Amino acid sequence: MRRLATSVALGVLVTIVISSSARWSAFLSPAMAGASLRTAEAAQGPSASSTMQSCEASQFILRLKTDTAIYSIGETVQITMSIRNKGQSCLGILETGPCVDGATVSNSSGQVVWVSNPGPLPCPISEPETVPHGWHDSDSASWSQKECPALGSQCTNDQVPPGKYSVAGKWGVSEPPVQSKPVKITINGLP
Image (cartoon, rainbow, N blue to C red; front, side, top):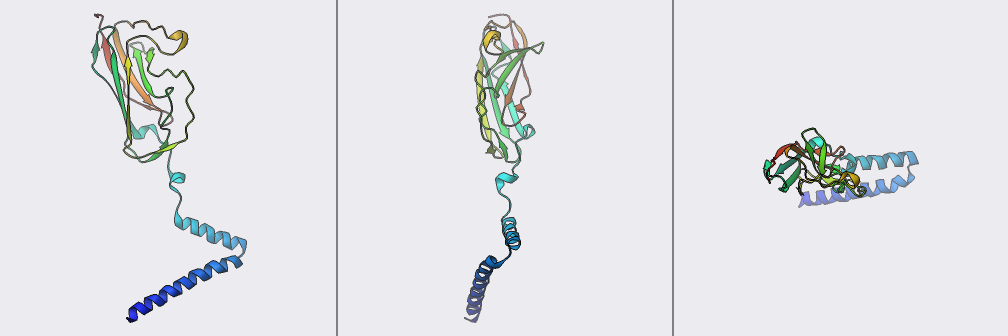
């Protein structure tokens, strides 16, 4: 019983001290009041958004695969990309539009012959969003083996010749975008 009375008395004393310090802060000079405010803010710690770093391409894994490695001429190439954040949570752009994300096919000379998202419109402006550790997403595209490296006069829609091609992907969650390792495919001359 005596311990309970002592703790109640201490609780009342703590309440009185807290109330008194709040009341006395009105009589402090502006500099001292500001110092006590900054101390209170420091005790709470910085907000998560002010300390979170921007996403870096190195903290993501972007994998690209095709449905097979060898295609007949004119056969559709199915491309799948999957991305995962293997690093810490960060601030990144999750919706960058078709002008950044997508797959690119290059011939054996390194010339781009097809882009899955040629970006007919400018990228929409997006605010950075939190990309948590373990975040993942995927996207897919189909290439009919027609030449179209960009819209407009460059897009001939002609069948690309048989040969060796390289398929690579990029994802604009960071600046610069995350890039995949290229995947090699072969287009045979037989339909």
